[in-house]
Amino acid sequence: MKIPIRKLICALALLLFAKASFALKPDETALFYPTDAALVNGVWEVPVHGWIFEPEEDSVKRGFLLDLAKKMFDKELRPEEETLFKQRAIRFLADSEEGKKVSLSLCKKESKAAVSSEGGQVNLILTIPEVELCETQKGWTEARTEPDGGDGRVFTAPVQLVEPRGVSVVSDIDDTIKISNVLNREALFENTFLRPFVPVGGMPAAYRKWESEGARFHYLSASPWQLYEPLFAFLEAEGFPRGSLYLKSFRLTPSGIIEITNHSLDYKLSRLTALFERYPERKFILVGDSGEQDPEIYGQIARKVTEKVLAIFIRDVTGDAPGSDRYRKAFSDIPEDKIRIFKDPSELKDFSLAR
Image 1 (tube, rainbow, N blue to C red):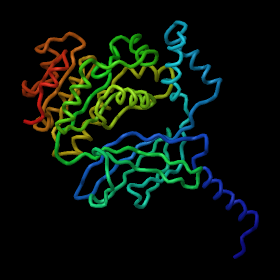
Image 2: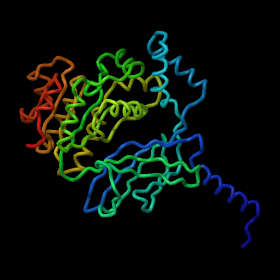
Image 3: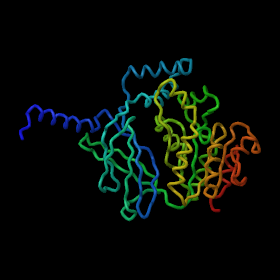
Image 4: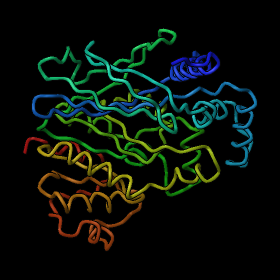
């Protein structure tokens, strides 16, 4: 059977175009977030989560950022505020890249490919037998991308190796370990975009004490993924234990910016449920604050798996008494000795994991 030359040329062109569209271009990049691996029947299951995007360098859009800032804050920004705003808001303007192929591998084993979905998101699960796992550093390893015919760049995906048994600390970020003032929208925006991040005094030391007793950490927040880099830098600079990080995605629109202030009960519940199901033999400490819905979220999950929750710590930012109607309702049917409403983080240091 003869194939018309024109059809053959068109088919080859389509194949070449499709292959070219998969590769990351030089002006595109990949960012991978720290995740948690689980050991199942002698095999490590390693989830990889990343974002493929084109960083925004366009001067027009950078100018848009400053115009947006003036509308958000209704004032002229000082030079240091303008610098911070650009650094923290610029990822909201990035162009997410759909249909980009990346291949990742662990310990130089056979790689596995994934194609970015809408929003530039990359999600896949790598597996490796426990006996083949290469050298790790303090319970962490990393997956690495293959160039895939691109420009030779290699991106790494950090992974926390969480053993089947032990203690996990699930921690909120805003107003739990970082001063955000979520209840005051104007102050929240300024603390998020214009001011250096400030830790809640005493929380890094309390968490390091638990880390020294063997705890693993999972940071769970409804802050947007676009703030991952400054939040990661904050955790590292202030000496918080290394841990996985779970955030939400938003676009930089008027409604999207407002949504940063609205923590989602369903979102946190789904993430918590996934963690509890992924590690059925681990015990958990849940740490949050009273500013929004952490008591209600933690209470709801703890009622389902009371025996797996060692303690719930709620940092008081609202002045609600421990015996208030709110807490009685939020923590109904949960043993009182598991609930701690605190203002002084030293109360966390006094709690020993050896129990």
